[in-house]
Length: 524
Image (cartoon, rainbow, N blue to C red):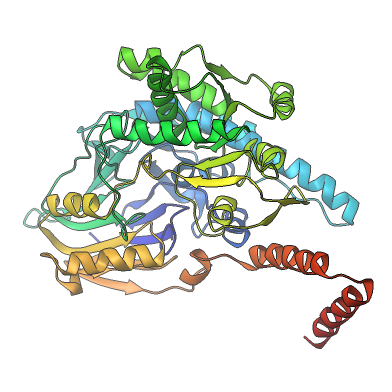
């Protein structure tokens, strides 16, 4: 049987994960994720799918994170009417995550349309609504780890614990050959591979002796120091103490699912042992509140109890969130999104970034072009909701909470999958990361000719043991997926111009500079 795989996302970048598999008997997807990062990348979410939604027979979902699941409601809205297979914890999390995503789409578009009306620009519509997301939930089909599931005629799949998130999976796909004398073709999609060291997750697993292996490479270019639970908590405690000692608030942008709960468990541990000063922790994310309930149902009793620590305050609604702006010191505010691109975190950053006694602690991966990456790179001025904000707060990064395996961990996981008879595809990584991991694999038992770095919208055709790569015209190039875009440059140019004008001592100097800028614009 012929099978082809098209890389519809997370090829040359780290978001929008989506593989489109076509066989003689139909087609299905592995993941259907939302693109995140720069505005240029996010605009892919508004464009058409590179396939017809109504012709997709099933979706196999690795886990609930939005960059893997976030376009499922768009898929349903476009005509997909079949099963979405995922583990039971993933289904539980999606019950809250997808409607929350729909609400965010509606809220962001409503705010944008108010601005567009004032600027004389046309209205835009959300990618999907909360109602679309709720309809999608009806199509979820829970599956068990290690148990074969029929997908379409001639294709079955099996889920393995990926150790990345509650319910996360690597997905093994077996495609029948169509002949009794030939073995089936075996493919394994890694999903996101965990560290084996996270607060809640077990070590990642998976089968070996495959034909094709698809491996994520988010941290393919770096290794993190191995830390014990006590060492990780000590590092968090140091950051929290220093932030509170500075006299302001500590703002932690955090992914609402898993990362926030991990931080809560560690903060509870530190509070219980008197290793932190008195402080209230405000968890300002409706999704985080619901996800915490899901985690509590699936966790060990001691971890579930930690999530109910008296220092934790779940912010119930928008009005209560707005009240946090009145707190100027001594509070720990945990809010989504983790890359600072949407949600309530934007308001907390607007209220605190300009304060020199405040601290922003980044605890997750910041994709190229994301607002979190801009802060991480040392921006002195930023724009939030159209307003210019001077950055005086301390910007700190604590990279011990990542749910992604680092280079050594990815290498061990990949080697445990050997032998791979045909090809290893490196995906879900920025260009530097997956190129670095390619070099590491070449230095081991995997020949260079067996390693591929597919780009967005490439198609590989697997037929009778051969492989053909069709390089289709991509919606975006790899360079565009892995860098800041013109929107980032525009914001930086505006703030740089403002800085320059402020530094000049006379109106004549400022007028001369602006005249030069206008002349240059006119000559373009």
